[in-house]
Image (spheres, rainbow, N blue to C red):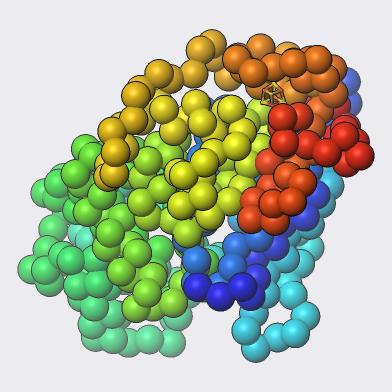
Amino acid sequence: MTSEPILSIRGLNVDYGTGQDAVHALRDIDLTLHRGEVLGLAGESGSGKSTLAYAVTRLLSPPGVITGGEVRYHRVTDPDPVDILALSARELRAFRWQELSIVFQGAMNSLNPVHTVHSQLTDVLKAHRPETKRAERTARATELLALVGISADRLGAYPHQLSGGMRQRVMIAMALALDPEIVIMDEPTTALDVVMQRQILRQLVKLKAELSFSVIFITHDISLLIEFSDRIAIMYGGRIVEEAASAEIYRDAHHPYSDGLLHSFPALHGPRRELSGIPGSPPHLAAMPAGCAFHPRCGKAFEPCGTQVPVLAAPPGDGSRTVACWLHQDAAVGAAAGP
Ligand code: SF4
């Protein structure tokens, strides 16, 4: 991992709907993915994690609309970053798969049931590299399966002849088919059991080291991220509320919501943590509480929390993380714009 950015998101705002009926799904998202790192995005359903993945990849469909901000992709060879939000449809088609690929939630069920693994893998190659010969495409499909730990004799298999874990690995192989620089994985292992999830993630991290791509990994299960990601950004109510190295989040989560998430999942390693969960439910986007959106569920809420939105900033004297919480905010930083 380097400190060089490969993807930078600044001030990203996304609404669902327009005019008076618009609800703010993402507010003021600032996030950087560094070259070679695994960046984890954690948060409960409705926190905005998937909306962020869709917005960054320009796959947001109506009524979702990007209302502000920028998303830039930094190529090694080009000093000028690519403005992803300004790419034409043609440029976007080339950009996706070749430079950035995405594995969606439930992707393992999106394999076409009437086509073999061979035909689905080689179709990607045929569409994006039409100059390749059939034998080359088959060789690449075999190589891709080997990368994800599936033997070549499964090339002729149909999806229903594979286990859930294998189908998910085929989807990862497909995402890697054109050697992308960035892979975004949106809850790709949620449907699998914990052992299989960890096997696949371990393999992904190994592949990342071999092939040098960077990963944004989205899940509600923060314990997986603690183990497999370099940094974690935690989302709540469409905002990032804390961002730090995984080890720092594990050691000393500052935001009460991050702490609540940590106590919602059993730790996979290290000392046993008491599981307490988080009281209440995530807010509805159309009825976001005033002030800190977490305040109705927060056991540490105090005077400014119900009226003023804390900004995401480094706590005084601590440059290792950013956190949006009045407990760690210098009053001089001021409040963010409301919901
Ligand atoms: Fe809790 Fe207040 Fe911090 Fe929000 S700002 S997490 S309500 S203490």
